[in-house]
Amino acid sequence: MNLAIDAGGTKLRAEIWSKDKFVDDAEAKSGEIGLCAWIEMLLAKYRDVKTIGISYAGQVENGKIVSSPNILVDEHELKKRIESKYSVLLQIENDLSCAALAEAIEFESQNICALYIGTGLGVGIVERGRLVRGFKNVAAELGHIPHQRAPFRCGCGRDNCLELYASGSGLAKWMEYKKLSCSVSLKELAEAQEYEIVEMFYDALLKAAGTTLTLFNPQVLVLGGGIIEANPHLEEFILKNIKNYALSNSLEGVKICKSRLKNAPLLGALLLKDLND
Image (cartoon, rainbow, N blue to C red):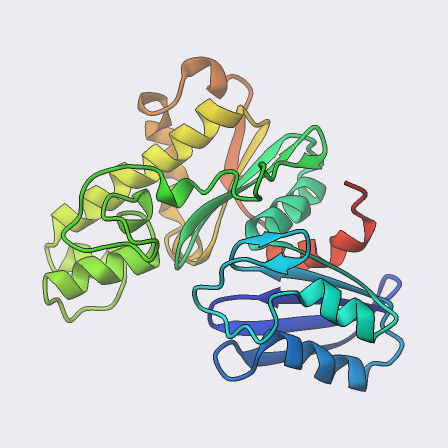
């Protein structure tokens, strides 16, 4: 049996599969139970699990959890702890890397970038069929490239991150700064005539997409995450305006579209058992 886990900032989600057959699922709140403890609870219930794949919303390296902004971590040496205690093979990757793996299968592409905008902003990259991780597993931390100075700080400690302008957490910070009472919604911000915030979001979104295309030259750029799902017009907006933000050669033959998958990070976690790199 295979256990796939999506460890997100608000929820822990799991699916149990036997070969290609779905068996069961489970869910918990990220702040109420440690990830390691939750895995051990699942292993106690599903004793035939042989492989565990984890999509993790944070920085990981060689099976270790390096950073965990929103997840209760009760064991940083997760792979070492679980594999030494149970007869299982555990693999853990950043959530956007997992999303990119799933999107690569969905779009049948060996060169794909998954640009996801939800609570945060980031990119997962598959190039020539392999994940691009970087030396310390922090490749393509797009949300933290320099953009414009904001009157508040990002979770990383800086005040000029792109994520402060194009993400759910960034919009929330702008609303708090301006003492707005509407929902964290582009539509409601526009209705409240907060056009400056909306325009800053659009500009940062295009910078994110254009930078991704120019740096990585993917065959497919997939748009996903909660902000994209809630605002389907953003796909057309990017298609219409991206020529002003990306190198023209990087746009030749590229497919830019929304994700068709319900939970790409979780599906990618399931694929980790077949990853050879």
